[in-house]
Image 1 (cartoon, helix red, strand yellow):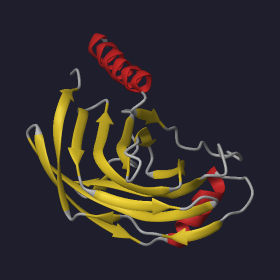
Image 2: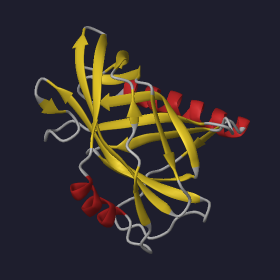
Image 3: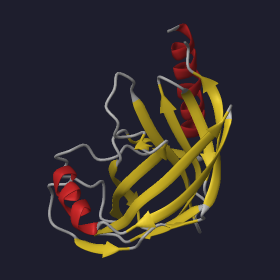
Length: 198
C-alpha cells in the first residue's frame, strides 16, 4: 500500500508540474451520460483499445485487480501536449479534444497485479470541431519477457458496435460521425516501470 501511495504522489507531482509550466494539459474522457463539450473548437474522438495477452483482453477480463490504459498526445502544429490517463479501464473511450492532428507519443498500462508499464507505439489521428471521429479498435498484442515486452498492433473498423458506445457516453446534440481510423505503426514496446507490490 505504501508503494502505491508513493507512486500516486509521484504521478500527481509530475502532472502538477506540467500544468504549472503550461506544457501539458490533462484530459479526462467523457463519463457515460455526458452531454456537454467544453467549447465549439473541440470534437470527439471515440473507439476502443484491446490489449491482448495470452489470448485474452487485459482490459475486459473480469477479476479483482483494477486496470487502466492511457496515452500521451502531441498536437501537431501547436506543439501542445495532452495526457489522457486513464483513457480507458474497460476498452471503450470517448474524449473531447481541440480540433487538429495528434500523435500518440506514449502509452501506459497499469494493473494492480503487475504494476505500471510504459511504452511506445507510434500512432496518428485527426479530429474535427463539432464532429465525432471514430478511431477504430486499436488491438495491441503484448508479449512480455521479464520487464520488457514487444507489442504488435492493428486497427479494426467496428463502427457498428462503436456507435452504440458513443451514444452511451455522449448524450448531447448529435454530431456528424467521421471514420478516421487511427494510423498505427505495426510494432512497439512496453517496459515495466514500477512492479506491483506482491
